[in-house]
Length: 356
Image (cartoon, rainbow, N blue to C red; front, top):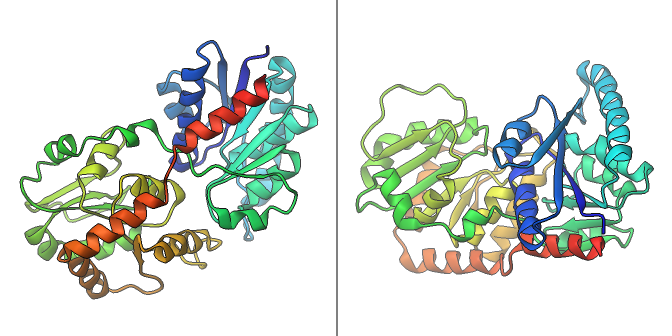
C-alpha cells in the first residue's frame, strides 16, 4: 500500500492549523504513513508545519487577487514556477492522495496532482467556495465542505459534508488553566480575536471601550501587529499573537468577540461560547465572512454587527449578553449544536478509505 499523503495550503493560520489537525488524526490511525506538506517557501506555513514535526517542501507561490494590481503580473511567473516544481515533486514522490486545505498556495500542487492523475481531496471552510477552491475543484476527486449550505454551490456531485477540521487541543481545552494563564481572578472574561493578523476595526473599538470594559470584565485581546497606547490597565491582557495557549484561553472566556473567519467560528462553536461577530464586509473581502456569520446568527449562537459599527453599539451588545445568564446559556447551547462531530476524524477516515 502506498502510504504517502501530501497536504497543501497556507497563506494564513486558518489554512494551516485545520490541515495539521487532519494530518495528526491520520497519523494516529496510520502511524507508518508518510505525510509531507507542500507550501509557500516564504509563507507562515513553513514555520508552523516544521514545528509540528511534519516534513515540509517549499515552492514559489503567487496570490490570486480579484482586483487589479501590477503584482498580478509578477505573481503569474511565481505561480507558474510553483506549478512546474510541484509537477516534478508529484512525479518524484507519487503520493496516494493529496489533501488541500485551500488558499492561493494550494493551487499549483493541486493542479500538478491532477495532471499526474493523483486523487485530490480539497476542503472549503467558508459557506461559498473561494477562488482557489473553484480552481482546485476541476482537479479534485472530492470537495469537502463545512456547511450544508455549501452543497448547492458544488454542482459537480463531488461535495461531501465534513465540517471544518479543528486542532485537537480545542477538544481538550482547560478553562481553569486558561483563567490561570490570564490571571483573571473571579472576573468574567471576554476574549477578542481578529484572526492571526488582528483586525484594525475591532482593535479601535476595544481601544475606545477599554477603560470601561476592563473595569467590569477581564479582557483577553489578540491584536495582531497594531500600535496601541503603551499603558495596559488592570483587567486587560494584550498579545500580538496567541498560539499554544489559545484553546485554554478561549475555553476560559464567557464570550468571544471576533471576525467571522471559518477557523475561529468553528473553534468558538466547539467550545460552546456565545459570540459577537464583526465580519469583514464586501469592500474588504468577497463577502465570505458575512455569509459565515449568517449561519451562526440564524442558529442563535451569535450576534452579528455589520457595516459601520460604533463603540456604543458594541458596548450595548456586550452588556446585554454578559448580564443575561439565560441568553448566554441559550447561545452557548446553539453554538455547541453546530459542531456535533470531530471533522478532522471524518476527513482522515475519508483519506484512509482512499488509501486502501
